[in-house]
Image (cartoon, rainbow, N blue to C red):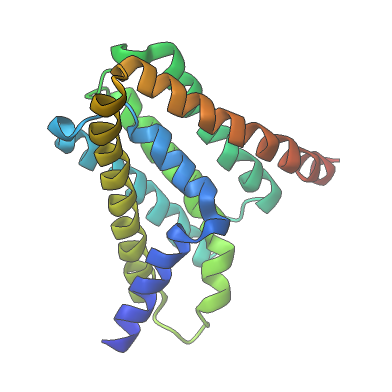
Length: 198
């Protein structure tokens, strides 16, 4: 039971770690266009993201796939940038039931999972029951993601009526802020990625 809470807390705190803010940024732009009325859609998006995340993490931990870490580190801010850009151009036209959005969520979850794989491999030894630890770790990640998503949507319901901000403006401003934070990350991670290619 102690191990369960250890890995659960590890996953939870790793997402909320200030050094892992790229994960938080992605969650922000993933759900910024949703309200509490669309909680089922939000839950689907977050869960599909976690499924992709857990699957890629498992395949990496068991050495079934091995991906260039510099490529993954570059792709993570790229997924954030693309999602935020989609928000700006689609605005209120976002189809919350879109299978395409779910596919993006799964694929981007896959990429973010690979980003966690090196960290997870460092803390789990060869003799451990990796699959159990992986499930516990992923459950902690899912709980942290749900907490972040609830905060983002609650913030929308709190801020927009007080400051008389339209939903369209909320989506645009938050997505633009995230893009502004993400662009330096893209430049910072581009050179290491390119240097490993050549």
